[in-house]
Image 1 (spheres, rainbow, N blue to C red):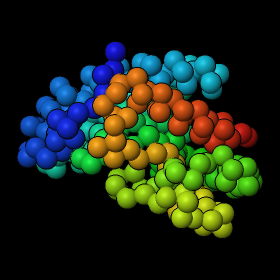
Image 2: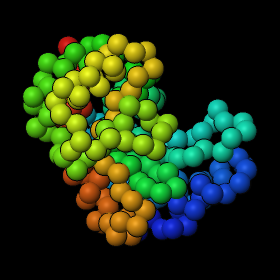
Image 3: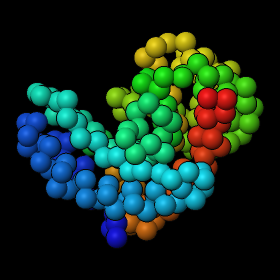
Length: 209
């Protein structure tokens, strides 16, 4: 059963060297991802109506620079997640992220973006003000939903539609000192609630695709 994240997990990203950091990711964090993913896959399957599969980032393409973050992803495809709308849980050195993610590898971006743009008013109501939006999954920074209006949200989705490398991720950031992270049950409930809140966006992505 997932017991929560510790400072030791976040300190992983201060370890020098690719092999050394990867070893710490494999021993400290990935077992926790497996526990988290097994719980969330069952919940998301029930809510989405599709069987859902866990994918844990392997960082296999890296040869020199150690990863600055690591994550798990959940989607309906057993073979891979990058080409599909999916959910993520992951860590940087200073926070945990919980995302509904549309990254640049998604092949039918135009249709997905159109689906979201057509329901812009609904989406604005679905996303809580204390959530954040990112336009690049490689960067720590994200924009508070409370700081943007519907026209700015529209611009973000238009950019996702029209720019090949553009991305759109929405969800929550939890600071590493957030007490929720020390309590496995509380964190799992937070992750479930976040993903269930964003499930309408996930379902919208598949309309007419």
